[in-house]
Amino acid sequence: MTAPSLPPATPTRGGRWIQQWDPEDETFWNTTGEKVARRNLLFSVLSEHIGFSIWTMWSVLVLFMGPEYGLTPADKFLLTSVVTLVGAVVRVPYTFAVAVFGGRNWTIVSAGLLLVPTVAAFAVMEPGTSFSTFLLVGLLAGIGGGNFASSMTNINAFFPLRKKGWALGLNAGGGNIGVPVIQLAALAIIGAGGGPRVLLGIYIPLIVLAAVLAARYMDNLASVRNDTGAAKDAARDAHTWIMAFLYIGTFGSFIGYSFAFGQVLQNQFDRTPLEAAYVTFIGPLLGSLIRPVGGRLADRYGGALITLWNFVGMGAATAVLIVASMRESPVLFTVAFVVLFVLTGLGNGSTYKMIPGIFQAKALAQGLDGEEAAAYGRRLSGASMGLIGAVGALGGVGINLAFRQSFLSHGSGTGAFVAFLACYAVCFAVTWAVYLRRPAAAPSATSAVPEEKSQLNYAKV
View (cartoon, rainbow, N blue to C red):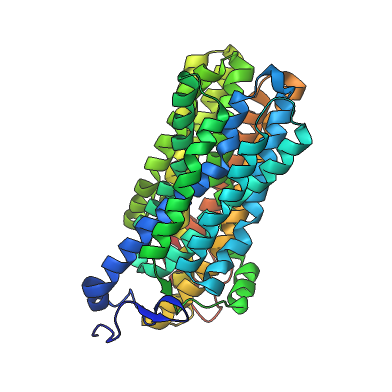
């Protein structure tokens, strides 16, 4: 096959639109596609990175909020739960916004929208502000969580299947690293005696910069159209909800622990804000950096296999946390928590690699091949990512609410960790039963295809 004759970007409909895009064509990919895809990946990561920082800024701001703010530990866990909830819900419309407005155009808009919660938090962040006002402003910060969904949907369309694990892992990891970056910035500001408004003031020009760079260097793919049929098909497919559940175990844990880690250290081990800030960034940082590794390992060995053993590791780390919590050992607790963060990042990469692989396997099982199979896979995997990302992020809400209840009932997080351990055990069982057990029937595979062929394809996702 030869590369398309059209240039990589043609200015139509008032913006930078690429009319032809076939990343599965190796000639096109090597001569034109890879360079364009990598450029869009870079600036998509930047916008998503800042979006994650704004979404999780309340995990940092609550560390600044001492007794003079009049908030109890339960109030703070509720506040971070609300922020996480909104970030999960907005992922669904953000996913489909890419097809409506274009990936470049929506990145500009979604980056600019981050100014709203940042400026609002800057205005109200002082003692005497009511808890209801903080909740309202926290709701606004949730929009930062949507940037992940639109970014992943956009980048999914740019890369060929053989590169998706690496590309999606790098895209998500670069975004996830916005969590430890804002925590590191807070550590520096707290250490220097600064206040929360200094932190917020730093991010306002960065948001503007991300929007400007997206406008200057990103592209829209004309082939990505709003397809309500794809959304309906994805919602009806059992794999979408199975993967959403597994994503609760990986990303839901990552984002939930990112919000809660500092508060747990403060409330269970009596750490000061500065002492908590010294270690809270380490887990999210390592979990973000290793996410592309999870995608790369999934590319090589299969996402299902990596995900399966990753849940084993997460369960073991959680068991150590229970022991450390009961023995009141802050050192063992912190080390185990950091290890758990690393495993959540690894699992994030492997589970997201599974999504396009699953729908590609479905296409092959239904007798499709070549570009037809690739187009089917891109269509359903892109549509499903918003639902999977949204449900997965709801796991972060559950984690913060579980910690809130555990501290209210027992004065520690031990009860919450027991619940998390049970959840990881179920995730392990589901991964094995659906994607690795033999014989294994694919939930939506056509009956015209021999079960043996279908199970082989799904076992390799």
